[in-house]
Amino acid sequence: MKKLLHIAAIALTGLLSQAQQTNATLSMGQGYSNEVYYKLSSAETNTFPASSWDIAFLRENSQNIGIRVNDGIGIQVYEASNNPADFNTIDIADEASWTPLYNDDTNWDNGAFMQGSASYGWGEYNPVSHHVEGTIVFVLKYTDDTYRKFINEDYYGGYTFKYATWDGTDWIDETTTTVSNTSNPENRYNYYSLQNNAEVVAEPAIGSWDFVFRKYNTFLDPPGENYIVTGTLQNPNVTVAKNEEPDGNGNPNGLAYSEEINTIGYNWKTFNGSGYDVNTDMAYYLKYDENTVYRLVFESFEGASNGNLSFYYEDVSDILGLEDISEGVTFGMFPNPTTDKIVNIVYDLKNTNSIENNLSIYNIQGQLVHTSQIASTNGFFNKTLDLSSLQSGIYMVQFKAGKNVISKKLILN
Image 1 (tube, helix red, strand yellow):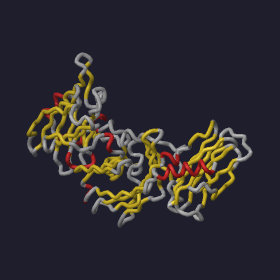
Image 2 (cartoon, rainbow, N blue to C red):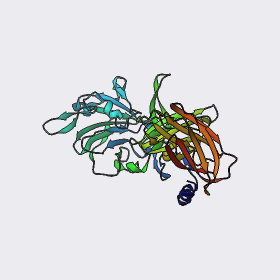
Image 3 (cartoon, helix red, strand yellow):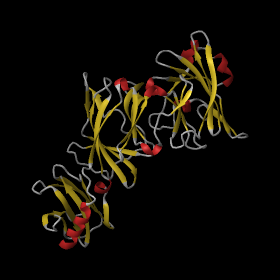
Image 4 (tube, rainbow, N blue to C red):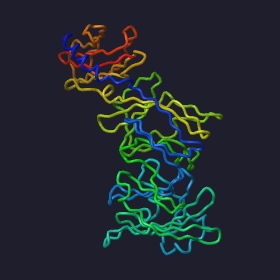
């Protein structure tokens, strides 16, 4: 057995990464002027000016429709009329009677325009033409009190819309244009600037980001109102769980993973009156699929003066996921690598009747350097091992439950 373990350990040395933990420092810029997208697996960053776009159009396929507003720069959407014929007679003096609408901060596709009173938010389906035809007239109000009226007149493989700007006395520069779904086929949304009358690219390809740092609208209860906050929204293809871990150890198994895009959200930091405190005890687990999980912890946030923030993360796909030894017996360990030589052993003895269970650790020479007894009763257990007496290097951990045996690589830094 020692000889086999020795060979296995040598084979693994070529796969050793220099560091499991990745430290990231990003900047949203002064006044949070940028939206910053981040990809964990590649440490890839994509940055776009926050004010470069006004409206985003979902373009995944012809069956899915979604229109969002850029709430991060303070644009407020109103439903001004449910009669498209009123587009020419909209009067900003009637603002008090308009219905305010907001992006859903839990679902990318349920944007402000989808909250309108029509069946599709902004329009109705025509069963003859198979188009969705616009019936709702919206007004967009900007932070500088600029008003733009807007109607998405038609959807069929793209969005055809009309808009005009209020100059203080009349609506001017009326424009009709189409944003096709064929634009930017690797992206989930296409973006348009009403201010510059142009399509823009304001997000990376869907597979090139896991979450974005940006400003967005959320409902705070209390005080029971909508506010613009600065935080983190996740890719719709990623689920997230969070877990308070003051000792730095955690287990992604058994956590509640959510598809809500604001699961990380904004409250990983709090304003203390002069700066920001970051909750470094809170760990976020980002899952791509059943086999890929990252653990992320925020470290700093410097606020609007420069928009700087930092966090660290590690791939816990192999080391945290409980691996089946046999039916009813699973095993995993975390963190791996470990910088302080403290390892959390996670195991689940569901249906075992074994009298003897133990854990053994071997160095790369195949020598036994540590052994621990494991509880023989059924159930889920955590066991913390202090391996500070061992030298840094690669070890093999053997978990044995009755006749069931599994071995895993452990790295002590």
